[in-house]
Length: 319
Length: 131
Image (cartoon, rainbow over all chains, first blue to last red; front, side, top):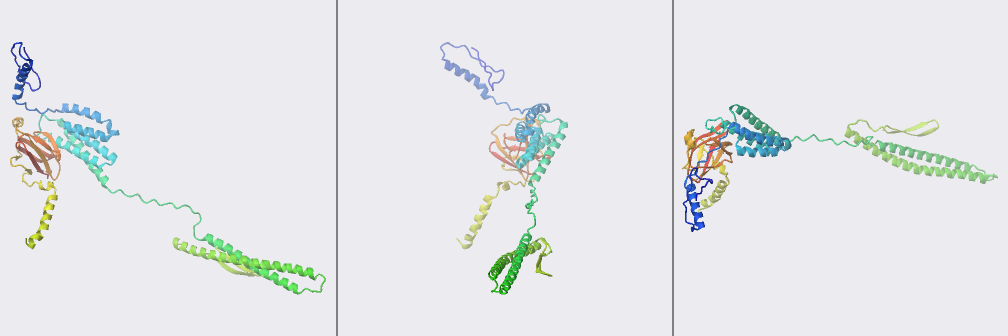
């Protein structure tokens, strides 16, 4: 019976022989013998040295294009995902172009998200790309490990440097203290007329005028009352219509008294409230002028007004 | 114990504590003229030397040595036997014993280049001075 083994580690050209044997041999022994024959050559020989994979610009370009085609659609919508994909493939292939591509993607992510870690990763990836690109121009580099054609190095090195420069600038921009926006002045609600006490002065003036009116009523009442008193004293008690005249004059006198009493109340309330409001208004206006730089003083003035057939007080002012 | 000795104990304790708290990086600073320091005397660094193509392809036998690269004062990438091996601080390699062509660079700037003789097994710390 003849058997051959061609498993991993088998030396090419080596075959295992088996001689015809009696039928009474046990199958287990037969299998063990076969395995021993096959195994011996494979374990006693030294393992072949692991040859480093050859990388040529053409082969590297093909692998790179597949990765770039996968990453390109992600760049606009998910630059972070594209960056991770490119960085992972760059680490596997050690392709300087993919390292720089990963740097560009991290830069895009860092700028979009204002992410310092992504910008730092961009610098790191691009730096590795630059290291490899520079080394591949060095005599120490394995000639069978070349990702770029001779004419492509300058372009890729310039691209890598640009990624680093842009990332450093973006990081510096992030580190700048954000200038606080100028405080927005709260627009004061429109309150109409300024609160300078002019309402109080106006009200006070009005009430003072009412109070002066009350004084006039007092005067008028007293005058009418005095006249009624004089009239009643001038009546002749013996006159036939004494009672009627007396009642009439008495009525006028009482009315005059009512007017005088009412005048007292009106004058008291009017003058009291009016003068108080005027005082408050003037005080408020002074404070307002002091606060807002006005120089005008309150234009309220009270002056006696006398003339032929009348007498009183004139009240004037500028509000 | 004299009073002076007793008084010196806290200072000694403080000094020990400070020493323990000091970063390991400081201890790894390299002052060798070649700019490369090795943690193992069995290892050897030949600055500016290089291996021939035949030496590069020579078979190396024996247990691998864990080689960790560190760059004192900067960054850089490590290239071993003509190919990219890693970037510091992630450049922990497993190298077979024997001579290896090594270059450490930061972009266009070569920080160190030469031949590193790696011992059998164990671990080796290679510190490269930047600048």
